[in-house]
Image (cartoon, rainbow, N blue to C red):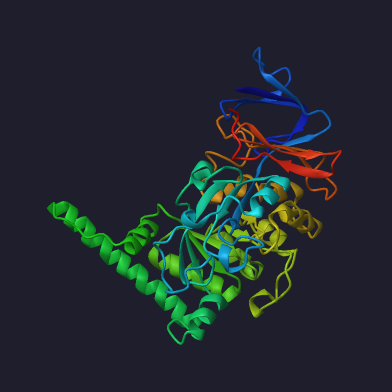
Length: 404
């Protein structure tokens, strides 16, 4: 199916805005973006008149728990942490996502079309993260990539969880030791596996070690939960020691050592920003922190950590970070091209450009204006959400309904 979205103020993010621009979609992919004169619309295309709207790529939420920490479901919908072992590298968020979670509908209302779902931070090594579209019948329908990164946690959460169990780790030094021990075991495992392959001998695989070996060989980035500056320093020390690709998650006190983070080229997924200072790690949380990191040269994404902050507030966090000093253009990049690039999804999502997935959102105005709303949302070229002006509410297409 060919769709031409015409006449809107097109913000590709990866290039300059186009007033009265056209986005041409075919087969669920973007095939052209440009002025009305530059884009040739084929006969029979479905025309979407976007006059008076801003046309942007769907937003990318780089750190959330949609579908594994379901809203309004209590313990029945709580599959965020497998807190029976501090090391659960073999588990996959993919296996616990419920597409019926209300958070997915909220995501569409907030213009979010891609979400990276992660295990929680109760374990030292929490498991595989997964990248999904925010609309679909099953997680398999929604899948972008099934192994995006490995989740790990430093700081208060794992030491509290296992300290209460009277088992290791109950301190920060214990948490770091667990990571170091497991990665050392993974190095030895990878060496034995390689030797067995050279000798042509059978080898008993271990899913935990296989996952960690993928971290060590660079194929799986390490998403490190860390708030305090000292924990961030530990994260960088461990990454230097083992040579894996580090992505800092939360980075609440990252602004205190922004130069050190920037020098190493380590990206930061910062947030959530709309929370109370509910624990010591958050005492220096402030909306000015994203701007400080960005000005230091840190590649930055902003997160809600949904459902900690409702996912449809993602863009509002950016707006208030802009109010506190973040450059507006960089603000839009923190929820589009930046998170896509940080987590290796930029071949699919994050911008309006030929070859990328046709995840397109029509806004009533500048999305950084809190009075603007998402009017129409397309995922893979299919309209899955629209705002019903007469009813005063959003309407999400039913993914379970198929025309017969």
